[in-house]
Image (cartoon, rainbow, N blue to C red; front, side, top):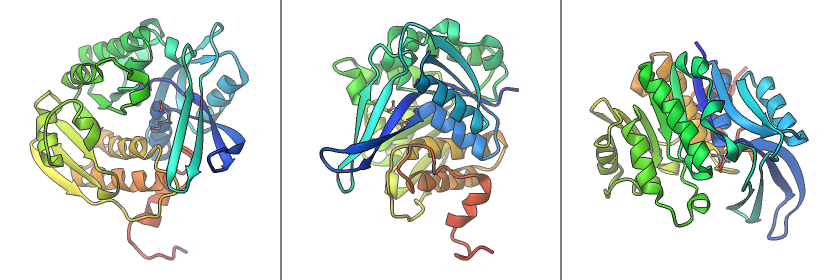
Length: 311
Ligand code: KDG
């Protein structure tokens, strides 16, 4: 088994140490929706594999090292002709986060179907993709299609997180691409705004029903501070969020998906899986990095409403 297998772009992430409209003091880390998920799973004790392309540069080395340190298996194609992408995160005013991308032509965006290791994907328990990857380039979109094709051929569930990035799509029709991916997925994660790019609906419950009409049997509509609504094999669930004071909400969706998938692959009940999902999502908001505050399994008890003092 190769555990949960995911693919996508991971970039260097420069986080401003001095916030404000003219931020300074950027510290280099890394981030990417799919590798955030892979780290979240590894921290919860679930084997995970990340497939992607990195440049032959120090940012690429840093990403490979961090993933190794976090216990994520990676299948990296080193691209000698393109740099690892970069993004910058800052806080122009309190409570508002600005993310700027420097990723056009990056190594990650040059992912292609031949980078998808058939043997690794064919041994997965779940194959997880996001709506970011097809926005990066035609070859990256074809790589997603290839991974789904291998998974479907082997009877492996496909998990899709919409993860809409408006700036990557510009005037292209993201909704049509998302609907096509959803039709080939078993598990679908979407924020309520993202869901409306695929289907019509007012309430989260209506959106979940409409999304399941596209094909997935497990639909999870993320509602941020309101928690989530899920329609799983015909049963409807509403789970409140775990109350916290958020430092930075970027990465919370990846954490939520990691929490859910960690319990799904272990065969836990929907209630347990959704409970871990909202807990992991809350943890992700506690720090400024996209994945650094993701919980290890033993951390979950700090936010689960039990005794506030742990000895
Ligand atoms: O979900 C968190 C991501 O936004 C971040 O880590 C970077 O993958 C990323 C993207 O493309 O925005």
